[in-house]
Length: 519
Image 1 (cartoon, rainbow, N blue to C red):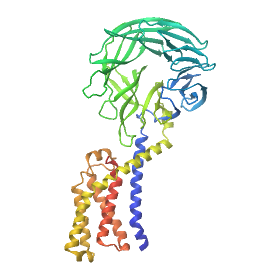
Image 2: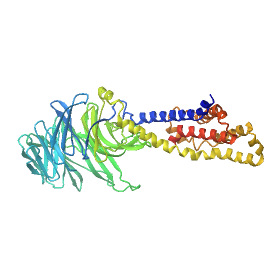
Image 3: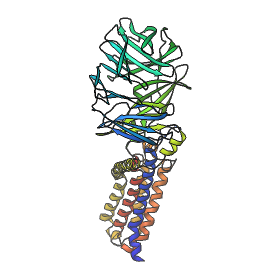
Image 4: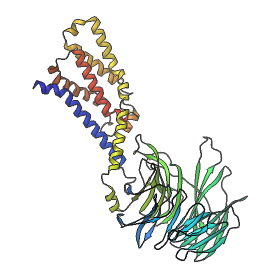
């Protein structure tokens, strides 16, 4: 019995520490696997790519298809409705950071920085300045002309010759057809010309000129169409910012073709913090039954990081009639997420930055995909473990803070040593109890550095309820004293050693439960 009591003095604290670590790991696992939104799934890993570029999506024989670059060429994954892989196709092409491609049901066309090629034969089809691989067709720019490529015949038809060689070209494919927009910077502002592609010809729809504030300049334009109107999203950049940082502004307008847009400022509120989303880029605009929807990446709050904070994730914003936005987060990963693309209204794909290879991830609002994604994965366990170890290491700062607690009982023991040495020699119990009392009074009085408002805000509810600091200080003191009483007799420890053990165990318990939330 005596030997078991001697072991309890180390066994019981070990069990308590393991309980604390288990609770911390469980809390972190919930954070790193938190869905981006209650109606969207966690991320599903669908592949890796060495090139940071938007993946191609579409339908292949009526089934969802995602195609992306690998080290050896193109990989096409074809899925069922639950996004389980049904078929994989590979196409060998040379790959670099400029590679783009189009996959049809019977043809693959790819382009590098200079030219466009037929994948099957390797023949060069044309020199190009820009490549526009849409879901169902291919367009390209050569010199100042825009061409439509007949994929099956590998022949080209000129659509339009640009009046201004500096004009930028944008293309959009919708349910009502394929549309082309040219953007020219003039002395009056930005001149936009809208066209609809009709087989191998092009039909002008109208042109308008718009301008922005003198302190801003247009940085990007995205558009789509709906019946006889266009929807325009303009990103501007502040020419001079008081903070010295690049600052973007975003404007939205909807108007009939040929009518000047009434640009209204739109903002993007972070759904998980009180701040607005920062650095909104990779924008695209889509029409849905709920209205116009913007898909983009932005810097917003996430708790998947070692220290919760901002990270780039994927979002969508539904625009109302008054140009107000309702923002939904679609991804929630600790990595830099970018290049989002929609498979349909319920599913998005994006690329997470990695090392040499980058992860392609998918999220969906379909219930069957949400259920499939809600499972334990190796990646989630590794993320939770890393976050736990990092937080435990920051708990060492609790030992530094506790110096203000055990300094006073240390001074008390020094005083007793020189003024009442016989009390130490005779192991008077009042020496131990007085030392414990002085320590607890110091811990309660100087508790704010340990139990700050910031710590309590970060800690889970079971640690941060009203009065929890004093309750846990006294509760852990009771546990430490109970363990001490259970095992100290078998050890025949003196009062100074017992007091040191008590303080050491008390600080250890505080450090493993509260220390991880100090930073």
